[in-house]
Length: 169
Ligand code: AR6
Image 1 (cartoon, rainbow, N blue to C red):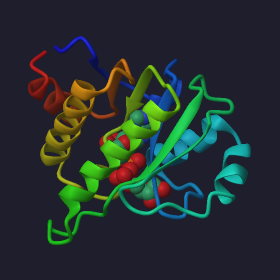
Image 2: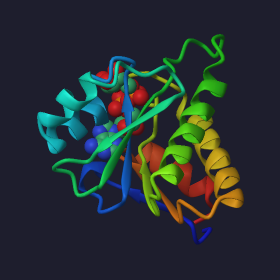
Image 3: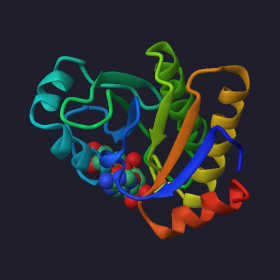
């Protein structure tokens, strides 16, 4: 595998990295899935901070402190809801990865971890989502020294095996 890309199966809230990415919704006020897990682990102060951010557009990313997480920052991005591909979902998901990587760079986050954005409650097809995540991350790392390493954190075995194949591990 490329030295700067890592793959693990597990819970993103436990990672000791400079920033974890949250698969949020446009309100940024919390929800289920990884968003719920991150809010629970970070503590109630996270919702208070998020309330001041005024939401977030699909494909964009906003940064908060990690609060009680081991991670220093949380980069909240909003993935697209899958609607049979008719709504430019692929381009919007690519924007999530690019925006999050750019926020990590701007905050000098040397280590960054991504969940599999949009592949849970938002039903984006896992294979296509993994291809977009790996392609956008490789492209960004090829032209930027920070982040130094990106970890894809897969919660489920299906996603883990898809990433494993794409990353040739
Ligand atoms: N660590 C890492 N990955 C996780 C964790 C965890 N603790 N928990 C779930 N996943 P989802 P979405 C995986 O549904 O599809 C929320 O309500 C999960 O297995 O969390 O982008 C938001 O507020 C899946 O592979 O996010 C939005 O309303 C991936 O994280 C909506 O869900 C993403 O699944 C966003 O939906």
